[in-house]
Image (cartoon, rainbow, N blue to C red; front, side):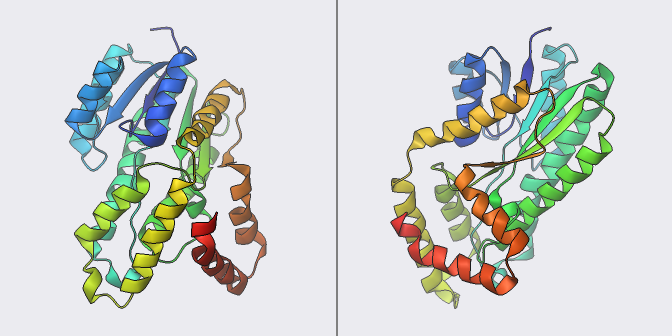
Length: 281
């Protein structure tokens, strides 16, 4: 297979699905993966070559990679690590299992998949690996501790990989989205009610405010905005030497600036001002 191809994780909705469509329109062959079998079948009906890939399962990762590489005749131009989920919960309310589950998907599975494909790219002499990280990988929000920690880990892995790939034509890019209208808030609610007894938490009123403010904010964000991520991914794929880190949209650069230049007490103040006025953006 000589055409440009890409494996994208988490294509059931949001950034993954929108990017899959966008790249296909641009002439890329997309291997669109999803965790649930019903989503895989839906993607197949929409014309994608889709496979089940659950990042929480090493066997699922191995099976998906084997099938995709067989179809792609052993070559893969690019990998977009998109799958993952966010989790709301104060540190004192999170169990060890809930934090472990967060890292199994967002970090361990993502890195296992990446490590499995790097030798393929080394053999063919080129490749691009894109991680959909988050501004939360640079600026930590309270009550999102496990999620932010997982994204910090991905940011560090990206830096290490980029330096390890120095001298090769394998490029590593971390894309850091700000707030977008995806299913992330609804998914975070499901995880929250599964893992946390809100009635017994001293933070129950704060949780209610967080969910309420985010729901109000989401209503004001056009769903089409997710195309910004797809366009950014496409630009990375087109560039001969892509940027190592890209914040989208540019307005979210405020978190990077805060992380680099503001003392901790001002960063704390910035967060609580955002929490207070989030429903007004």
